[in-house]
Length: 108
Image 1 (cartoon, rainbow, N blue to C red):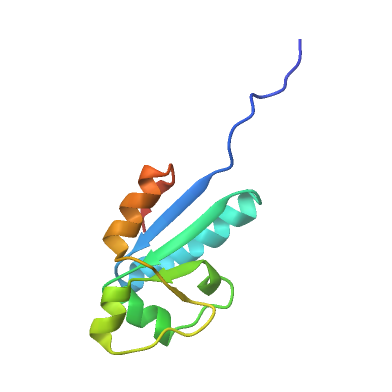
Image 2 (cartoon, helix red, strand yellow):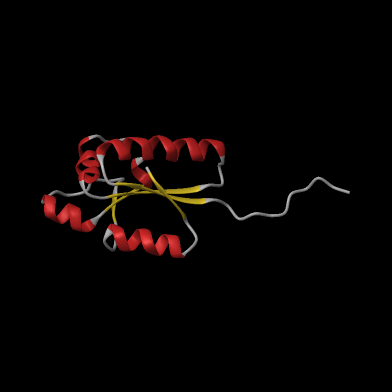
């Protein structure tokens, strides 16, 4: 008898950050998840007030994991800077599609 575990797929986590405080929690959670499980895929989806926070407070380790809502960005009249990305669709649609594709949703 072996102690091997059944193969489980890599974790895929999407952290939703609609506020500056939620963005700070999402950044910390994303980095903690990747530190605990190197195979874990993590994305941060920022919308509403978290978009301005992401633009105003860069985070060297988490910005590459962060997608900004194009609607919020357009309403703000601001531009995203690398490594932040702009989502192809509104955050609400992106979040729903990721969940439909099997990503675990966590409200930060």
